Amino acid sequence: MGLHKARIRAFEDILEEDSTIDMVTLRSLAFNGIPDDKGLRSLVWRILLNYLPSDKNSWQSTLTEKRNLYKHYIDEIIVSPGGETDHPLNNSPDSSWSTYFKDNEVLLQIDKDVRRLCPDISFFQNATEFPCHKVVYSGGAKRLHKRVEQSVLKFSTLERRGLGVAKLSDESRRSDSTQSGDYAPLHEGREAHWEVVERMLFLYAKLNPGQGYVQGMNEIIGPIYHTFAIDPNKEYRMNAEPDCFFCFTNLMAEIRDFFIRTLDESDSGINYVMGKLSDCLKKFDPVVWDLLEKQELKPQYYSFRWLTLLLSQEFALPDVERIWDSIFADSDRFEFFIYICCAMILLVRQELLNGDFASNVKLLQNFPPMDVSLILNKAVEISLAA
Amino acid sequence: MAKKTYDLLFKLLLIGDSGVGKTCILFRFSDNHFTTTFISTIGIDFKIKTVELRGKKIKLQIWDTAGQERFHTITTSYYRGAMGIMLVYDITNEKTFDDIVKWLRNIDEHANEDVEKMILGNKCDMEEKRVVSKERGEAIAREHGIRFMETSAKANINIDRAFSELAEAILDKTSGREADADHARIAVERRPSRAPPTRACCT
Image (tube, rainbow over all chains, first blue to last red; front, top):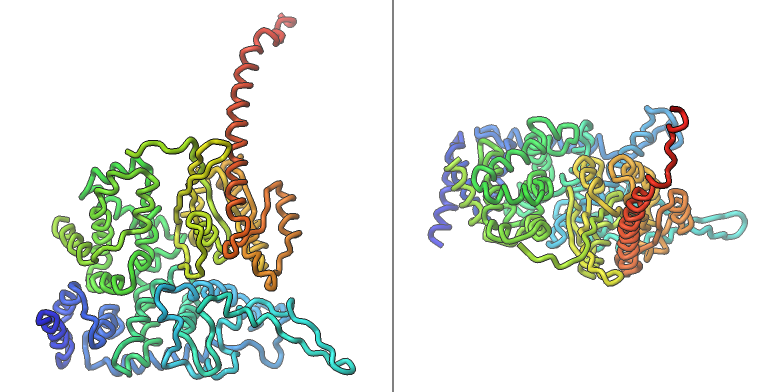
């Protein structure tokens, strides 16, 4: 208990410095884990992800500027198409409708994925305290998931009332909530956290057209948003969405090549990084490396997901957050991350040596629950020997 | 090393657009459960189930793939070794059905020529949301000479049947090939005595 309090104190001391934060000390503290208390992780991640500069004097102006910028993004990008001379059947490539329909394809994929984000916790299905008013009071017009609800016309029946008055009665809506499990859209004036995540990912895809949205990005933004949205500090919690958006964008700048197929073979692409992990394993446990090689158990069977998602699908959320403390604290990102992955393999080496191909793929694809400090300590051991 | 507890090993692959229910189908088959709480598959996932067919213990090694385009370089590398491929679409989603053609082309490009294929129209419990009729599913399957079935991982309709039919088709082919091979050998042995010396008359 005393130790825990002392750790919190150490963070507070650093963060309360008058002007410039000592990044070396902050990194080394964060590397050993950021306490869950007092919104420390939420603040320190903002710094480690280069959103907040080390110069505290410019924090307020940075926050104001970025948060306003995000508001602009929403105003400019989350729009309904149309205008006086435009209509949905307009074939011109400049038609706002043509863009709208193209965007909806991206949105459809995002919608599918945010509705299966961290299903083992209820957080993303709950209402946010701070919904985006322009969206939730738009009568549905700016709700992104509305745009990709499946065509209702096919199931509508024509109701005739009197002479020639026809009304389309929409019957398909009743099963919407059953289809999406508990990730049901909320009523006017409210929105669920998954809807917020959907908006951030859509904005990201629109602002980064070369990359767009790739499955798995939801698993990267999820833990950041969760951390920010449970911050006990109201001002930070209220701005979880814009702050998370920029932190995610910064993080993606470092790992986006993992998500781009045409870069798979490049020095920053996923194949290269998988190769680095394989080399690391070969160096530290040639016996296991050799066995996996003989069993033709290729690194991409397990490490593709480990690396692309920064391990976010391998562990429970609190453990992911703890692991990310160390990854984000690494000034030489993502050197230490490779050691973490290597440590995971070394820690199950005995099972691997006794297993055949099938049981070993299963083991690595469903990594057994384990005290993460064990993994991180092992990774430190590796880093010292490397 | 574990002792061999099966007679044959079949490698199967599940492909199709994202969200059609590939993971749910596999989970229903391997664990006999259904849950909507699945995270999206990134890269490739893996399950094992042993079934018994015609007195033979067959170990099915089933690979579940991510649907999105980005993962194709990763997932197509699995096509080559697959003996059976299940192409899944969602009967409540037109686009996933249209894309079946695209997936078939993928198979042509990357899989073995004699791979057994099967098309599954999943989510057939959601009749009120259906947009792809069973007839259209059957038609495209007929056109390509592939087996077809409508399934529901949720209501447990045709899931076991789909896997055992696919496995049986592979089994047919495997034993057929063994028999063919025997035939070929016999034919080769006989040929010298039957085949006329073609050049004899010219010399």
